[in-house]
Amino acid sequence: MKEKQEGNKAQSLVIGFMLILALSIALLGWFQITQLPEINRDAEITYENDVSTDMNEFRSALWEVTQDPDTEVKPVSIKTIVEYPFQSSKTSASTAQLRFATISTDAYSFQNSNPTIVASDVSLTKIEHRPTYFVRDPGTTIIENNVVARQTGSGVNQSIGSQLLISENQIYLTQLNVDETSVVRQDPEFVLREASREVTTMTADDDTQDIVMNAETTLPESFWKEEFENIGAVDESGVTVNSGTLSVPLDPSRTYEVHVSRINLDTS
Image 1 (cartoon, helix red, strand yellow):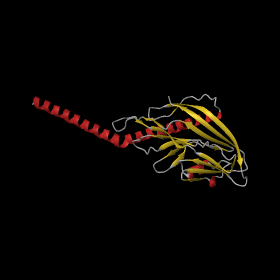
Image 2 (cartoon, helix red, strand yellow):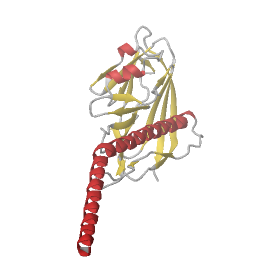
Image 3 (cartoon, rainbow, N blue to C red):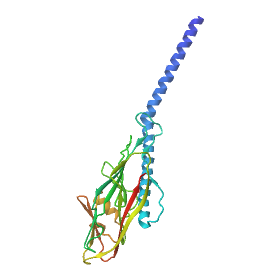
Image 4 (cartoon, rainbow, N blue to C red):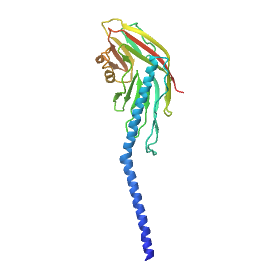
């Protein structure tokens, strides 16, 4: 009888262990299916907000250098690593691609301007930040033409901060001197230094017609119309984008200063 009781006790322990193991597996499955995606989603949202801040700071550093070449600009870091709280073989830290691409070597021109040639031979570099997510549509955060924007796979283009291309009578064209390259190391730092600057005073050649500034762009017309809504020198209703060329009508009664800055990018 005693041996039978001990055998029943041993069986009960095994059954209890199996029940606890089954319950643990079920809870783990429930966590991975229902909770982990939300935790990862929150991590991706936090990372995306950090990247937006970093890209704006990079653009602000560009702005500071164009305003004062003697400005001591601290290194600017851009996050490239998404870290998930609970990492597995399917959700490990993911490194984003940070790409510098020249989209035009003669990016800007002006019509009905005096002088006739303004800002010739200015290259336009587009900076792209492309992460890899496990839950959300990652989209691409870009800097071009002194504006920061986020593009999604669904075609949405969201402005992150206001444009710094045209500020009333001031026009800022910035060339980034960097070879086309992709940076994939963790959270790289950059230092920006002005290589040269030219400032040209520009008026209308015929003050009965708009001055038209043309600039290469990868962003759509609707995006730029919104960006220029509150700029007094620009009639946003006349802003167009055709075949990748942005055309901006400028008030011909004004006198403009066109700033062309060429910036060296130190990635060491």
